[in-house]
Length: 289
Image (cartoon, rainbow, N blue to C red; front, side, top):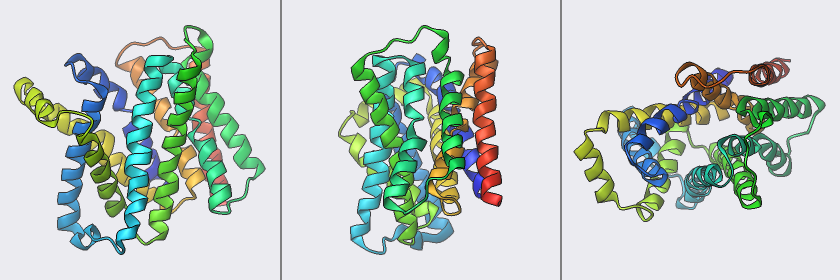
């Protein structure tokens, strides 16, 4: 079930591209999109948590807020900004590959912080995942633009992405459930992004365009569902394996690009999809053993 939950998260995150294309066409900036996601996700999670178990809204210790500063600001806000910045400085393919260096960073952090052991299987799976991501994004098929600044920020997005697993694991070990972690993650992110955009102007723009259905769907399907699923999945998986399993996201994004936006398909892209899916299967079978 933990693997299924993390896979659901990866599939949901893979939908971000579809929504991003629609929202970009309406004239919203990336940070405005993140702000709207944060506000709506926080509101929905507040309602869900209140009616399901309002005791989960309480922190066991106010010092624990540091875990959610980690998941919400250091991870979510930072890696989302860094990823979008890398897309502008390099290219979508390069940025996607660098973002999915996250499992490697999770593996390293987990060895240093949680005492996890590096095994031959983990090494092979990481290699399969990374090569698969490169092929899926089409990086080897030409057209990629490299800049050292873009590469540096792209790698930073991978570090930020990896840190959600790390801070989330600390929060779980402190006794917090997926609802609590997800709610405080987006509360912290929303508070931060409030100072980075003009909230009233953003809300007014959505009202004028009548795009609340799109905004709510964007928040639910690419934020609430995946983060609840992923955080819950972390409770039954080591951080390193959860991060690798979630790399089904670029596969989903590639398939949607082919089916919805009629993007080109090649043997290299198909090989990458097979590699990423195979790495998930190998990791799952290793866990069963």
